[in-house]
Length: 452
Image 1: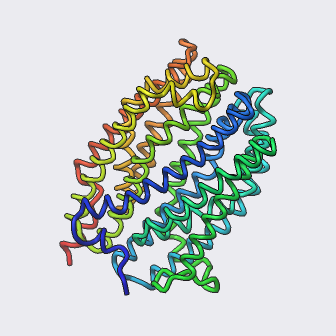
Image 2: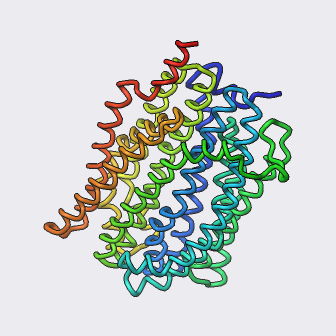
Image 3: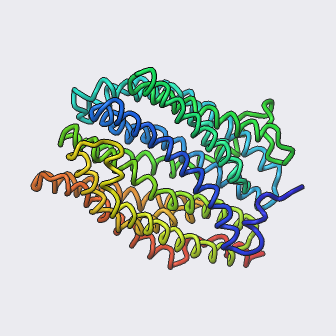
């Protein structure tokens, strides 16, 4: 049987991590592109208010989707651990439990998202001129919840066993589908913002089906068989145990971002559009951050499962350093070229000015964001997801919200909100650095090895 994770378990560490990370990077880039296409087409065809409506829904969408994606991360850690240890019975149970969880989560998310949309958007202080479009976009997006959740589940399974290439191929295909449908629905047929959400849902469904087909037709040990899709009680406890902190972390950070978005909304629709444009461009800075964090989670999980502790340490150091360098390079590009990027979304000079101002405050600090996410990826791979959850809860939620709430009250300027990010990234990086240097993330694994 071919060991698809061998490049992470054997041979050159940097080649293994980079070769695994590159397809993840390209895949995330295409995913970011088709998220960006929504805003580009909406901003150019429907105007600033419609763009603000799409932008204001982002934090709320991630609040609900992020929790279930966190559980999917936990499942990926469990699967990679069993795969590295060559425990194929445990691997099969984990895979089928993961798929069963995704089906249930998708159904729940559809109902909850569509019901909560108007109430939460009102609580966020969404301006009346933007609210109808925001609700329409949000509800249409969540009507396709099953596609979003299942795509993350099946993609996570493939990545956990070392296959990052096929999810890339499927993302490229779905990205092209999304662009074509966006142009058709919004540009040609003149439909509203809900049509942009529908295009995204259809494209996600296409990539989810392709990933699932790949797993169902595989001849390897992680093949998905429909008749075996169910909850295996012991396995479900493991997945929830590792994934719940990551899910809670995503949701808590999203709550903090909703508070941030509420403060941005108070500055009006132009501020919402400008910050939304910046968020779309900033998403490209997250690409190296996300791909290296995901690579590290899989690399650490597989190598700890195979009891290769020194290799895990060296891989962690390499991956974190690469992530920081790549994020800073992207940050410099965004810093200098943000006015041109922003104008592509919306030619309104006020929108461009706000987006550029935010870039000039935050872009040079992306290395700190990368460091925090990289160490968090290492912690999750080591089965210690509570550590990043607690650090980010403190730094990115409690401190960030307190800073914004207090400071904006005395200095009612939008730049105050922008500075919240570099300040809290610096704080989380300092805490993670101390924890990482102590080596506490490997405690238990090396002790168990010595006892053997």
